[in-house]
Image (tube, rainbow, N blue to C red; front, top):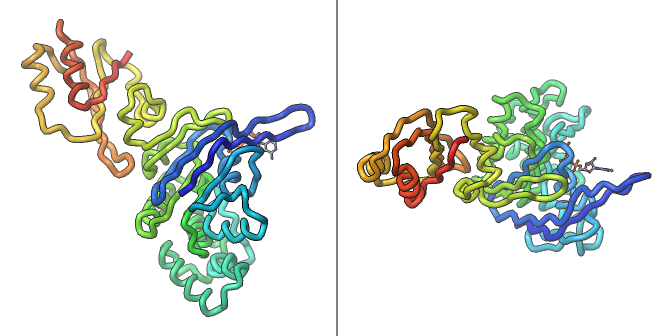
Length: 321
Ligand SMILES: Nc1ncnc2c1ncn2[C@@H]1O[C@H](COP(=O)(O)OP(=O)(O)OP(=O)(O)O)[C@@H](O)[C@H]1O
């Protein structure tokens, strides 16, 4: 749905150049939530602005829903942008307009008639759960409500793609969870493709199907979250599930994305004559799947063979050092 190849963006300052994007390839599949995570200055906002061509990349191509945005004339690009909604960190609402009038704004610009606008705004208010706030002004809303208005406004022209620029980073944890839940529902119910940028790993964990880690203008890792969790040495997996800080010697972390039908623990104690001591564990939801993590101490002369047996049955086995 969103394909970017070889994106490069350099900001030229008086006495130096800043390479904000360097050979970035991005592939967001239709109907998925894709998260780009990285620290401040990594290039995330620049990437988002290049995807809808608010900023023109110095090199590379951006194809959204089959249209090569980098090759379009200005009027055609303006039209293509109707298919791309954007949600902002600080909401960017017009303070002198009511909630309903804020949501109607992009429809007014697109020349939609008054009756149709009213109908669409009513639909959108219901979609984001703000029907009772139609006549309120932004200053009378909580942060979470403001972001719901921002989302409704972004969805007004019926875009296929929603770009989210740190939509939850100004919100408290509970409100963050409710806005992420709303984005997930919209993604599922409307088949909306969502590309979001964030500096919080938790956002990736809560709603993303795929993710990329961005550092110094490049992706250091990207892919489907569940696949990355099954990839030994994945930085993303490690950041989502940090290993315990301290644990007894011979402890391993076992990660499993599928339930095993076999009694693996009793198998290894029987077949390899090892002792298994459970140190801790948790099951978490990641990308809509249950992912289990178990920290166990495995001891005995045939320890390595026992661990190989677990790995051979699809568990990810990592030594905790
Ligand atoms: N208009 C600009 N002019 C000059 N340099 C810029 C401009 N916009 C961004 N940069 C620089 O490009 C780099 C990437 O910035 P960008 O805002 O894309 O990062 P980010 O990951 O979104 O960071 P943050 O989370 O702090 O917004 C930074 O070094 C930044 O200082």
